[in-house]
Image 1 (cartoon, rainbow, N blue to C red):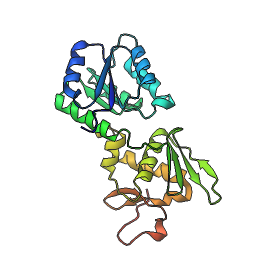
Image 2: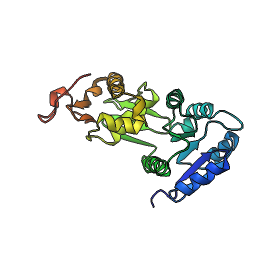
Image 3: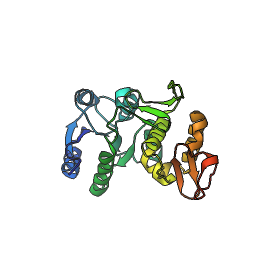
Image 4: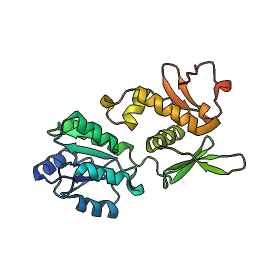
Length: 247
């Protein structure tokens, strides 16, 4: 299996849950189990992990706060994090996503659901192996989590993007010309679409266009389909197959 070489870290102090998770996803990846965030720190700084499964009620600190701390550090900015907890309240789920978690699974969980969600994250991780790439008049630099617009004289200017805007624009630039529906974008970048509306995508796209300057016209709304980035395809050059919808 293509994901078997990828390392997954489980931070969970309950041994029975450790055994269940290992039995469920052990064949998908190389799984390491630790019981505290202190142990997790050592692992994350000394090994390359493709995914973090994080409990909330841990012996040494709150898992939510640990998630917040990881997201504030550049080296863990893109580390996929799945909260794995017994807290089923809606407020807890929303809080986790606000802190930067990619997904939220409630204990007791269905083995098939855990397996499917972990596999989905592992397949997506590591797709962008380049430190940086050029596309559509921009340079995306993953090492510093920035996107630069490139002028005719080759001078670069960093765009003032939020973390989610960086992920959205780098995704469009990597898949230039491809149309993504609002639901696909929600599934990719907001993890659990139950807690956000499709209007969230429109709001972020609108903000992105403004920050991109004139090139924002190339990030286009395709009528009844979604969004795509196509360099040089502003309103004056759109094809007769597309209908521009400015939000």
